[in-house]
Amino acid sequence: MSKVHGAGRRISSEWLALALIVVLIALVALCVASFNRAFSGSVPITLTADRSGLVMDSYAKVNMRGVQVGHVATISGGSGNASLTLEIDPDQVAKIPANVEARINSTTLFGSKYVELIYPEHPSPQRISAGAVLRSINTTVAVNTGFQNVVTLLDQSDAAKLNAVLS
Image 1 (cartoon, rainbow, N blue to C red):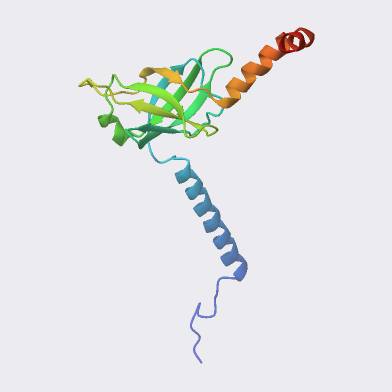
Image 2 (cartoon, rainbow, N blue to C red):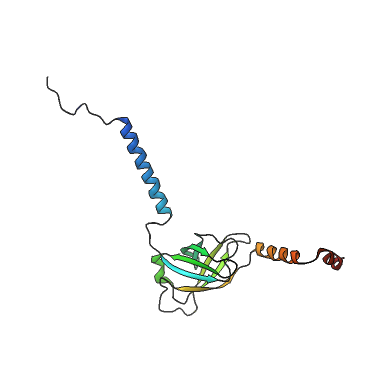
């Protein structure tokens, strides 16, 4: 009788299970990295504004003419001016003139904010580049801001005098 060497060898089920778990973890990590745009480059632009609004989030959209051209990477600033770092998609940079203007808008009255790049009437032949600094021309006022202003005013007023005036 002749024996064939290795014909009876099999990979144990424990090793197969370990390999499956490693492959699944690698696929999940790849999906998360892809979702977070780890494999795509971006062109960083800084946007300064009087304020960013109450509902401006990181990863908020940056649109121009209704098309998303990037996202908000970071938001910094306190009670004074706000500074937003925008990450513009590299394939969109050639379509954005250097003299583009920016506005912080909201999707709805109570909705989250996004940055809208406004194409100028007379576009510059130069294109926007990394490190450019834009100034927001306005920030829409949220209902929460109006409510906050009314509460601040009421806190500063004397309730008895206010009652007498309203009566």
